[in-house]
Image 1 (cartoon, rainbow, N blue to C red):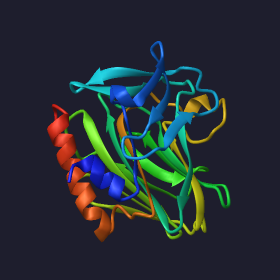
Image 2: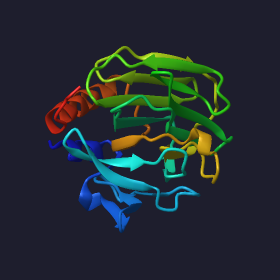
Image 3: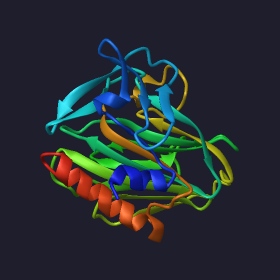
Image 4: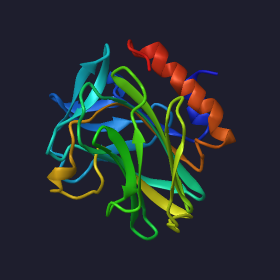
Length: 233
């Protein structure tokens, strides 16, 4: 089964920098269509055309401007048990800024993933509790897996050890909002906006990507990265 069909069978929403899925007004990216569902990603408040498409590792990436609102939001995401993200992103140089966030609509609790001091930090929006995931991969592209449920969060890089953040959230059951390259649907917050580059952003409702059901998807996404991107892992 082709990987897009497999993601579709899991109920996932797969956003990417592929030209046919990117809505643009001139160079500015104004929205994203999912390759595996009918979902769309719309610009977050304050994003007035600050995301463009640039080449990295021989492939197009969504390029987000530093210190400018340039992110997107995906909602509502109906998730009864958990929500996972898989993010394939570029890192040609160390940056600092938000890569993704998940907002539990039930109680306004937010999980934030940001690049910080040569590692990825996963934390509550206020910064605590938090865990750090050091970069252990070589190359310019990285594949991150993140899962979020009532007990907290688990994060890992493809082929790497998973790290857990214990945080009783009570965010499920209920809807969620997934943010790409920003942490809230709010203008301002420029200090949290980093020059990120994202090729693929998968939103997976009610799938624990670190559990047995997610094992095959992790393997297939790692193969996809190696096959599609010139520098592999």
